[in-house]
Length: 175
Image (cartoon, rainbow, N blue to C red; front, top):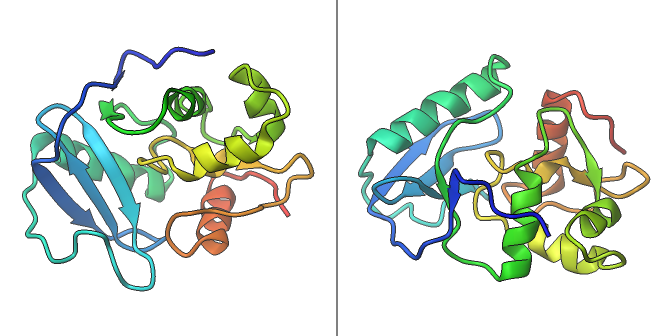
């Protein structure tokens, strides 16, 4: 199993910072603790999970907003942000760690991802772990497709249209 990269911490923590930003795929809502990103939510049907909560920006969230703006503008291909994966099973975190090694424009199949984390033949469980990624876009779960190149789902934003937009943005062929 791949280990979690050093910039992706796993210690328990709670959010104390919140920032919302516009994007081509809908408003984004980011949360963080004092040192790293905890979550990124993409607006679904005009709603974000913490819409009723006042924003409390932090330096790390401002940095994330800048990098996301650059990503959407096509001038950034990788993120240099601390991420804290504070939830999820060991299996889920191993999947998310493997996703951090995918570069802009890379794609992997659910089956290949399962093999990469030592769980060949577990495409359905891999799909569940990919869908539970708390930091989409920054941890590029949109880069996982069926072996045929088909989009089989996406749990963020407007679902498949959001994933198709992200794939098109990175020049990743899909069906």
